[in-house]
Length: 93
Image (cartoon, rainbow, N blue to C red; front, side, top):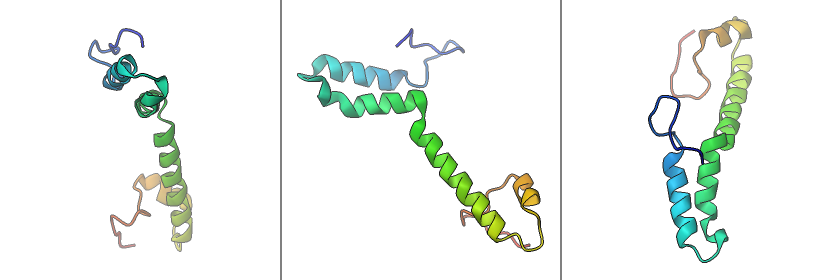
């Protein structure tokens, strides 16, 4: 962990996760006891799970957009910028 400060002089977004991990690591008998805190910290840094989930949502949106594009082109639906395939918002065409 660097200084714990972000570019805007506040705390970085992952600093609290780092503190939890370092506290656990200092008190643990074995480093493996802090696996959950380490995973949380690494997820905050790299956002791999978040990115994977966003890609799944986008792929499902594109799939649904192609399926429901009767009289509209897929590019027109995608240019709307609204995810309509999740089922939260029903739009009339």
